[in-house]
Image (cartoon, rainbow, N blue to C red; front, side, top):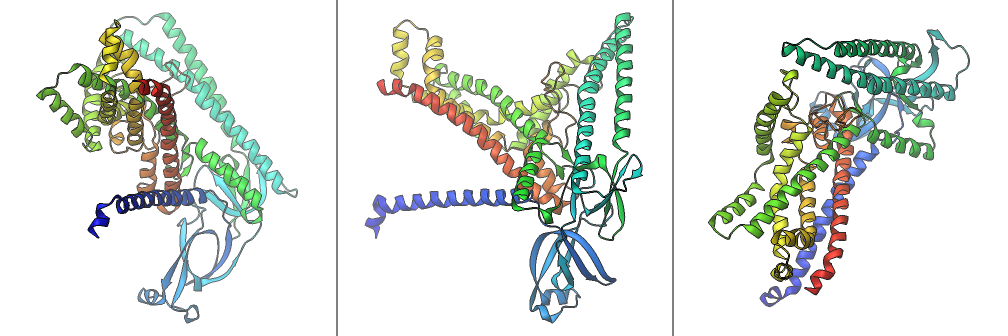
Length: 548
């Protein structure tokens, strides 16, 4: 037995089995996240239930969100009369009834014994709205400019009106976020300039006052146009019958989409599913992040990781070059290396506290005092933002880049350096033209590890820049275009917020899986891009390494 253990064969099988087990576990987690997340966007059927209650029979419109088996004994102990016809166990359905503004709860639990009938009515529609979530009901009419349309209305008519409402909503959004935002930005700049003259005890130049007056007049005109568009956009209503057969007026300016899940073919359901996924990736969040899309979070995550990579790479490479090429081998450099390795094990929240105290309050506060004194006491850089988040994560991932780069420098033979300097090159030229290019695959490896760690961090970002909902993106059409002082959204924080801070946990739970899948996809995409660059560099310098 001991001879077999001393041979390599059992250990090979054991290690291969552990690797296979890890791969299966990772694949299983990804499949679970993918299934739970992507199934959320599938147009599930909406049933009409006749349910027995202590007050008589009641009609419900709803989707079945979950089913669990409950023992009859457990129900009896809870004081519920159990029908023996259903056996020792029966199903309990979690039904989403939506219509949030008209119902006490988004979800209800119904025992199987209390369901009298369950049917799929083809005329039940799912109406997605900007507020109050979705609405389940039967469209029966349309109100246009305050008047009810009496003609026979088909489903194409509703879709046409919804498309018109989408165009109006787009016009309003363009006016708000393009024209009005630009005028407001210029007006703020001019007012700050006038304030600087006043603080200095000087008279505000007439040209500045004239520009402020012109911009104010322009802003008022655009605001008046915006109010006109909003008024015209709020005159139309969908008339829908809810589960109680009551007519409900749903404002068309709140309707984003409408579909009939019980009357859709398989291809139509797939098309709707793909359309919902695209909207999830490209739209802004709504309803405290429990509805809508996650585009600002995707944008903020990718932009922060790119800025972090730009910051951490030169810092890590320069530190590694100094430690390996210039610093002597003494107690001090050994102490520095030990400190670098230990920094990799510091909890990330500690880096967040450091970033808040040093970058935000100290560096940012001094920048405001020196360059943005006219805007004080409102801080510009003396508050959490994108720049400080990127710098904090750069410090967090710096040890990884240093260690990886130094390992790459160690693998380059000393003969390469001696040969270069023998031909007349200086040490700096040797490093820049020979050593660093050959070590570039190791540098990219360090960057890959840094991206993998930084993209999923949440704790430090909560202190130095990430927010629940950002009013605008860090990148826009106003100079200097990239606003490093702005707060931003992050996919990791979005998962935390939706999963633990949402007022409607049951409705938001599938979004946790969908956002988690998206976060993993973003991280994998960034890593694949870095790996492709590393492999290209490795092939480029492989021949030189073999010759040496």
